[in-house]
Image 1 (cartoon, rainbow, N blue to C red):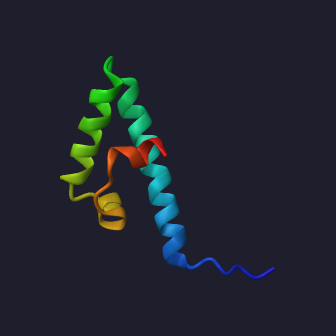
Image 2 (tube, rainbow, N blue to C red):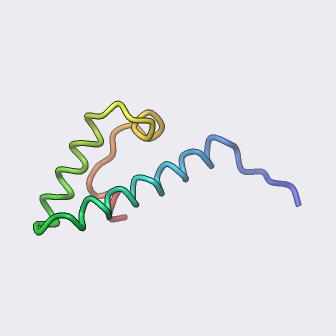
Image 3 (cartoon, rainbow, N blue to C red):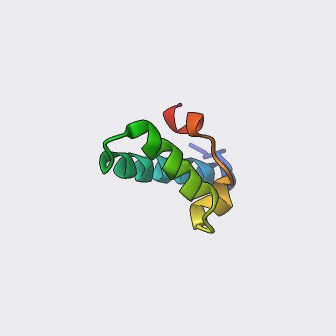
Length: 65
């Protein structure tokens, strides 16, 4: 069976999975989940991390989706 999924698509999918796992860990440490969501998005969107380079800015709604 031949794999037709482009490498870039795989990289984006894995980066999204990593962001969701980091978000869930970040959220567990907070009492106010909504504020934790806003804080996480702000931290991600202002970082120079590898995940930010792949995904760019993310809205809070995308985390829940």
